[in-house]
Image (cartoon, rainbow, N blue to C red; front, side, top):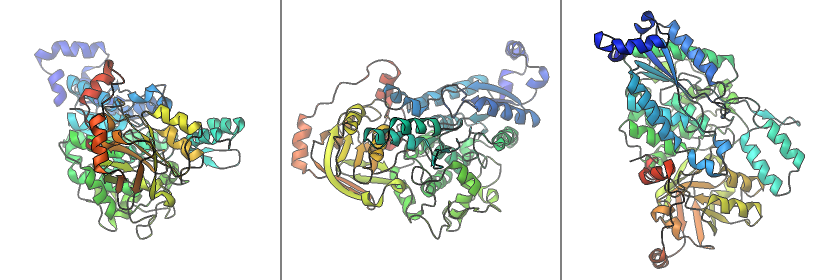
Amino acid sequence: MRSDNAKKGVPTAPNRSLFYALGYTREELDRPLIGVVCSYNEIVPGHMNLDKIAEAVKAGIRAAGGTPIEFPAIAVCDGIAMGHTGMKYSLVTRDLIADSTEAMAMAHQFDGLVMIPNCDKNVPGLLMAAARVNIPTVFCSGGPMLAGKLSDGRRTCLSHMFEAVGSYYAGKLDDAGLEEYENCACPTCGSCSGMYTANSMNCLTEAIGMGLRGNGTIPAVWSARLRLAKHAGMQIMELVKRDIKPRDIMTPAAFHNAETVDMALGCSTNTMLHLPAIAHECGIALDLDLSNEISSKTPNLCHLAPAGDTYMEDLEQAGGVYAVMKELTKKNLLDTSVMTCTGKTLEENLAGVVNRDPELIRPIEQPYSQDGGIAVLKGNLAPEGCVVKRSAVAAEMMTHTGPARVFDSEDEAIAAIYDGKIKSGDVVVIRYEGPKGGPGMREMLNPTSAIAGMGLDKEVALITDGRFSGATRGASIGHVCPEAAQGGVIALVEEGDKIAIDIPHCQIELLVDEDTLAQRRAKWICPEPKIKTGYLARYAKMVTSAAKGAVLE
């Protein structure tokens, strides 16, 4: 066993004495030592139940003959961090999580790992760590939140809550209405109830083969989640026995499967940051151009919130991620020969799977659209690409040309939106919010939700070198590369310039001639870094572009 390096033989007698100080017995040390990476904390609603998940995982490990040893991973609540300096610290935690988990796993020579994440950066951070350490690993997330319900019977969720703020500023909602949303939008623990980033990544953990069936969809408050956790604990012992490692599972074919499922589900645009970063840790290059190639072949089968009015609990009852994958196999869109953490191939996993709700998971012959849920746009404004959640864009905004309204920070933009200064037809440009320029590439759910809440989501586009929450809907185009802080063309846009967006043809153009842009570039001076000390300053120096997954070099 790998753990023998820390517990067997005369030279490790001091090590054993420290295990005994922890209360472990010789019998426990004779078994495989399984690290249980638990992201429990008291500030993230999606993580407040993870102590219960961890106990269930540990019970499963013990039942299967292993010794569980728990240690923590951090997590940020993107919703609580939204709209202020705290959001600069969200994406950057992905690397802190990966680094610290790698350190713990290597320092203590575990034989296997069970990862217990749930929310946005926590899932990809732990997947990155799993790829780096490359010892047998299985994931068991904390599960999604249930949808809320308003007094009139309408179901609701966090994206509605943010849009309610825009409605309030537009005079469409009073104090009592806003308070009702506050009290109803998030009724239970769990990752927020739509196909936002957390649930997108937990579903893709199934699709890539690192999580058991139901990992992305079984609600946090259902007892089935605890049973899943026990099975995850049991399954890690099988993976250790057979020496099935993350890089045996996360192959190029598995990443292509994940991107295909991403397009079918209509996942968050943040997956376009996280999948390349995870692939990078596996030694695999996942190019943005591949996304459009996969999207062109992959029908969009689901419209969960914010694209529609259904939620994660509905997807679970319809058959979950496996039912979506089963539909995709009807046109041979997945490589079903890949190995998964079940110890079986994807083909074996999908045997007997049924789509129980063809209204929620459209049959592949009757999709919402023939193209996938995400599009990568290119043009002179974004020569390296930018991304949009196509499945959440109204038909009216699939093509749009309008005047640029330019802001050098999210804060300036949100103030203008709340003040009613954004008009129908405008293209809001928010720059210097990229990985380097932010630094930290803030999510911009506040401005996009304000635009939607004011009823302008079918009339106004938003373009940024920052990124969006999975809860964002409308013509919200993020990850513009190169970013403004790197001298990208987005830094040269001036108030009133016309910008043309063509989502069906994956194009985005700043309608300014090259001579004018050359004159502007000659005058451009990169602004001073917004933050010059601490972790964010180090991050800004090391981070690559969003087109590469914002990995550190």
